[in-house]
Image (cartoon, rainbow, N blue to C red; front, side):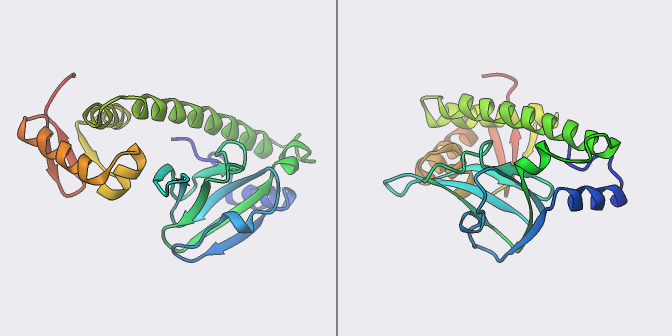
Amino acid sequence: MIQIFDNISVKNRLKLLNILETHTLHFQKNNSFLPYISKDNIIGIIKTGYAQIIRTDHNGNRTIIEELEENALFGTEISSLKNREYDIIAKEETEVIIIDYNSIINCSANNKSFYNEFTKNLLQIFTAKIQEKNERLEIITKKTIRNKLLEYFSIMSKKHGSKHIYLPFTFTGLADYLAIDRTAMSRELKNLKEEGFIEIKNKRIDLLYDEY
């Protein structure tokens, strides 16, 4: 997967961050990012750590919208952060690089190769995020818990080219990501296992089927 600083040397990366007038924020585990993001249109980069974009509806139901690992990118517009139901939570100690989007558009280094590489990477990441949102839509619009699980497994299998899937979060996190009840999901996973569709070993899911 493309990263925002791919093909940019450490030296030029530091030049770029200086030109874009970036700043770094530090968050402890379980802290929220959102109150500290003052700009209307920012882009954030996870320098170190791990965070999640969470949606909590008016009934208190939580859904994981995005997983943000090291080098992951999020933004006010691309991550729907103006939605009052959304928040960004550090799941471990996390450093975040904050960039004002206007600084990118009006950058004085637009004739530099490292800036051109940066904007190319940014465009590719935006494109990938659109694809991820479309995949997520395919999952959550399935009418049954079984079909949501199988669609998620299928997408993960194709992405990694393997029938051995390693969940990036806990089973509670998986239920939040799929927007389904944790108990009902556990029951359906048990059914899928008993019917020979999958094997479960801790966070590893082995797919035993070709198509569904």
